[in-house]
Every structure is written in C-alpha cells, then in structure tokens.
Length: 435
Image 1: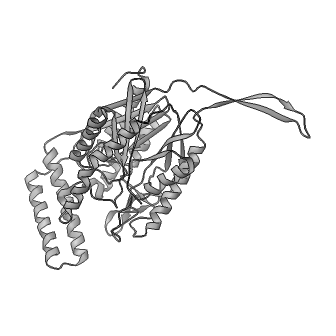
Image 2: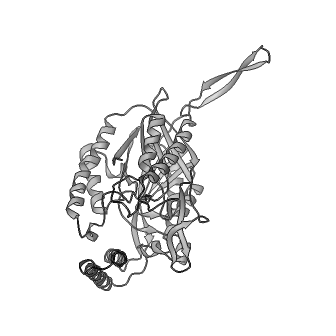
Image 3: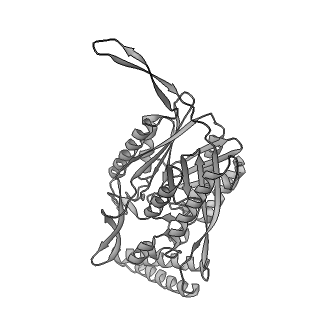
C-alpha cells in the first residue's frame, strides 16, 4: 500500500489548527523542525498551531536516528529530503479547500491490540503478548460533515504499535493504519486521518510476521469499527417530537425529528513546555566508550562471518547503547527535560492531546478519565522527540522500555497531571483566549 501524509486544517474565528499525520515510524527533532518550518513557510501557520504526528509504522523507510544505519543511508536521506515540502503541500492544499462543517465525536471498541510487556521465566519482561495487562481498546472517531451532512473528514484514533510486519520481509507497508483509513474512506467518503494513540506498551494481537494479509486484516477490522461508530454520529442533533397518532390496524405514533442547534463549538489550541523528571545517567564519555566498543564488536561479527543470531544480538546491544549515550549527551546532570504538550479542543466535548515520545496506555487512560472533555484522545509520536515514558509500575518491573528512556519513574505521573491541568484550563477559558 502507498504511504501518505494527510492534513486537516481547522478554522474558527481567529483560531486555526493544522493536524498533520504521516505514515512513518517518527522523526528526529531536527527533521521535525525542518518539516514544521516548511509548513510555516508555505502556509503561514505559526508553529503553535501545527500538530505533526506519525503513525509509528515499523515497516517504512527509516526516518530517525540515521547514525545507526551502516548501509543504505543515501536512500534514507534522499527520501527524507523530499518530505518537508511534500508534507507542507498537503497542509497548503487543505487550507485552500476550507468549507463550513459540523463536528461531533463518538467511541467504539476494537481488540486488535494487546499489552506487550510479557514476563518470560528465562528473560524477564520481553516484548510479547500479555493478555491480562492493561490495554486501551477504545476507538475514537471525530466526524466532520458539510452542511448537507455529507462526511468531509474523519479522525480515527487508536493505540497500537505498527509492528504487524516483522524482519521476515523487506517490504515497505503503512501497517494496519493504511487499510483502516482506506476502509473508513470507502464506507463514509471524505478523507480519513489516523491518529496514533499512546501505544508504548501495546502491540498487535498478531505481530512481527512477514504476511501482509495480517496487517490488512487487522486494519480492516479497525476500519470497520471506526466506520460503524462514524455512521452512528449525528453532527446535527435532532429532537424527537410526537405530532399525533395515525389510525391503522394498530395505532401508529407519528414523530417529527426537528434539528437542534448544537450551539457554538469554539476551536482552542494550546502548546505548553512542561518539565519531565530525568533519570540519572552515567557520564557521557563512559557511555560513549561502551557504545563504541559494542559497535566495534557488531562490525567485527558482520565482517568476519558471525552467525545471524550473533549479529542480530550484537546490533541490538550496540543500538541500545547508542541511545543511552545520546540521552546522556543531551541530559546528563539535568533534573528535568523540557517536553512539549499540545492540546486542540473543539467545543466542550472533544480534546486531542499530543506529546512527543511514547506514553504508556495507562497514562492515556488516566488523562481521559480525568479530562473535562468526554471525548479525549491522547497521542504520542507528535512534534518531534523520542523516548518511552514508562509508568512507575513499569520501572519496578523492568524491561526494554525502562532502559530505552531518558525519563525517571515519576515522569508519567507528571505528564498526566500537566495534561489534565491544561485541559481544565482550556475548558474554563473564555472563547478566543490563547494558552
């Protein structure tokens, strides 16, 4: 399936927002800033009004941490260089096609995901299938209709790693978000944007396979549930009125469905820099030396005929050591790390919360449960930056995510509290006030 960058531009009064999503694993801060700058240069959108997110497919071209690539880097760079203008063009096109819309949201449920933090007797916490672990299976849908109630755009929010496809194939795929979007567009019409949720510890119920039929099946299941939810959303509410009773074999009540004005639905956009607690790092020079030694061992195995299993294990160790060294270079000696928090709200019922990095599913569920907006959809992989944001419980259990993070065990609680605080401020603010 093809890869897409899809954009939705919203405007209400003097406030605007550009919601942009791309089929990609994610982007380094440097490349994110290039993309955001291209959008601003082409469209005039200020940085604070742009939400740029990735679907987090793991079977696409590499778009981050290019220093870890030893072969084929020229192809990755060529692809990356083409993206800022192409993504900005999607926003420009969306901005040229503004039309009045009505908007409403709904939620369903889909079980194509599962908690991935599985405890193995011999290896501790591994990436597997933990069927009893927490998993947010909510399918969030925001429907935008024109004034004739024809769908113009649909936002589909769901949390699950894009890891249906594995190392058994070298095919590029958008993973399950691609067919999910396709199904929604086929069933409703208009354009569908997939918004990845907080899926740090969520994986597909069938994953790491070389069979493309699996990602297409999972995406179709998700898309059909989203379409079902969307068809049940009324962007123009109606009030049922009994107008009389018709005489017949059985008396039949006659009703009139009168449209009800939903009232104003102000658009609000807020960006805020928050301080997430940092973990304690060894000195950068020590971590750099460890990473260099592991890279040397990896290259030796590759050049001297090491077995595939040996090379794979050495590559994983070198890659993770490189991440830790990178975090130490950036954050050694710091108590906190500045992290961007963004929220877009529509009316009194819809909130789109986004952060960089990879929040856990429990954090997203906590934010949604405490939010004043009934339909609160939390996303990671937005506006640059990498790093898992594990819960305190995950730190106590250990595992990959707690090693591959620059944050401490209290960061997830801080993130949840800051997000809820921002949403409550936005809900209480007069229309037109910026944050």
